[in-house]
Length: 289
Length: 133
Image (cartoon, rainbow over all chains, first blue to last red):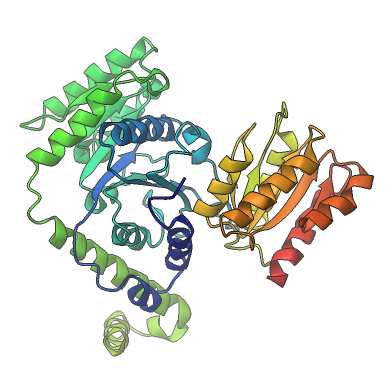
């Protein structure tokens, strides 16, 4: 079977980009100015069923459109103690792991504390350069405040298990406010419909057009078509005119942020003295770059 | 430690019924600073090779308890080469009789580790192997 894309070359490119300082990233990805792929973010608390959902969703979307190519970026947490990680999301994706038009990559979060990983935007751009039409991004299992994914993707899907209980109350200010679609997983659990109703109550009370809440069981495919349709409907309803510009803004902020981190951690002198002179010194240093 | 930022795939080919040893190694490698991808039980050589390629791992560890280590190892190594990924180093762990070690090393693995070995010395050997490049 011939591969529809150069799998090994893409994999190696991702490895180069994931650890690269800003200068190398710019050299590697060139001028990435077009918003080419649909970006779908899957987020939610740990153990909620994100990986299983992605597996079923990717299978469904590849089946529905026989020309489509899909990439999955699955982020798992880096241990703050050892700096190592167990990247286990793939275990839940074994049903799809041999589909030819699919590429799955596991990524450790490294220094990122926002549910994403270092260089995540560069990784997505790299995949877009290889013309993947859709990217499914699985965040680290999150609490309530990790909302950076909003800026990075077109559609945010928040995955909530039926037994999340009070944590949904805790999410009221934060992740619930930025989600486009809600999914309550494990619909065989009697609490699932009640959880969906509760979420509808929370978001319906606030937003003018309240986002859909889908109840599903990835294991038997129930609810997957509904979720996939909701993603398409959201994409068509939103204004995509400024997508390229928004992505570029996010990318620039990410690059500058990393450069600042690199300068500060690499040069102890930079932050010496009073705040204003440190600030000016840092600005000056960045201008030289 | 040279294991920082190294990507290692721990895979279980064949029909083994449990993966205790594979998980012990995976956790020890993580604690030594590596990024460890774990496949879960009963994977085919094709599946394992595809993951090794996609994840661009530096090393692939095969955990085998079933006794079919010779066939499985040879199959995986041949398929890595077919996929133009013959440079990915492979080690084997599990229930491997001493008299088979030589043949496995000849087949192209960089190390054979059994359950009698101390975990620290296994991690140390993997570390040295990766440091050699």
